[in-house]
Each structure stands twice: as structure tokens, then as C-alpha cells.
Length: 192
Image (tube, rainbow, N blue to C red; front, side, top):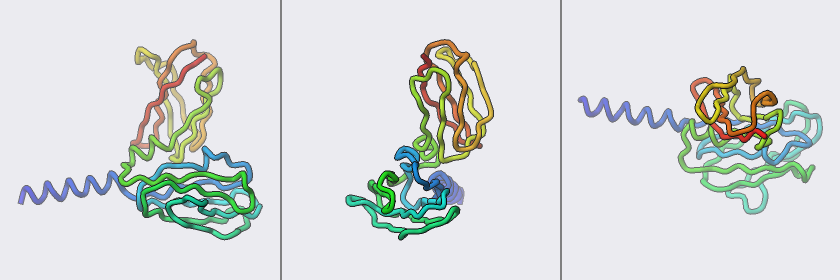
């Protein structure tokens, strides 16, 4: 009986660690490829939301592992969702605006911690003054540690996009710890 309970607990923990997630992407004229490209696990859903009033589509490109097409839709707030079931790379674009494109990379098993880490970007790196932190997960806060591990700054994050003023820090290597609820990930940044 004890072994059965341990097996059940292990199975439940494993299932929770790789739970399916819905990722939201804003879809608008001028969206960058980096902001429209994410890494997810099989069974995860991507939901694109039109954030301008122009007509757009979300259409898989040639060479995409899966085929999907929203058709041409118009209207601020319009949404299209697709659940990815196959491991592979899925380049996609807007049929109306050729400069709107991205890539959905689907991996077999991606833990929630790994999804969090893979879907955060920061730029510029190296940084002189302002560092921009972009995440598909809404960030709560951040901490900055120097190379010796000393906390030199911290602050409240502004959701999916946070600007961090690093102008008052000396030149050198820093570690940015991004926090969203229980999730955390650390990135190296060079301050000029």
C-alpha cells in the first residue's frame, strides 16, 4: 500500500511539473520575430490576440511541423488559438503583412520551470543604461546580484515587459533573477 501511494504521488508530481499551458501572444503590425517566437511542450496551446484593428492571419509557413491557419480576421481583441501536438519547429506568418512572423518550437517534455526560463529574453546585453526584460509569464519582481553574489538592486516588475535602470551600477558582470510567483530564473548581463 505504501508503494502504491508513493507511485501515485510521484506520478501526480510529474504530471503537475509538465502541465499543459496556454501562452498568450499579442499579434499586431510591427510585432518582432523575437516577441512572436516561443518554446512550448506538446499539448500546450498558443492564443494570439489581435491588438490593433488591422486584418491579420496566423498561418503556418512552409516547413512547419503542423499546419494551422486562422484565416484573415479583423478587430482589436480578436483571438485565435491552436494546440500543438507534435514535436518540431513551426514557423508562421501573417498572410496580410509579410513582416509579421514568428516560430513556435515544440519540445517533447518541457517542465513549467523550463518553459519559464526559455520564454524570457533580455536586451540589450551588454547594457549601458536600461535593460528590457520580456517574458510570456507576468513577472512579479527582479533582483540584481553582482559577481560576488551581493544583492545590489531589486524592484517590482511590470508584467510581461519590464525596464530595469542599470545606469547607477558600475561596469561588470551581474546576475538578473526574474521572479513570477514560485518560478525563478537567473540570467547573466554585462554592464558597460
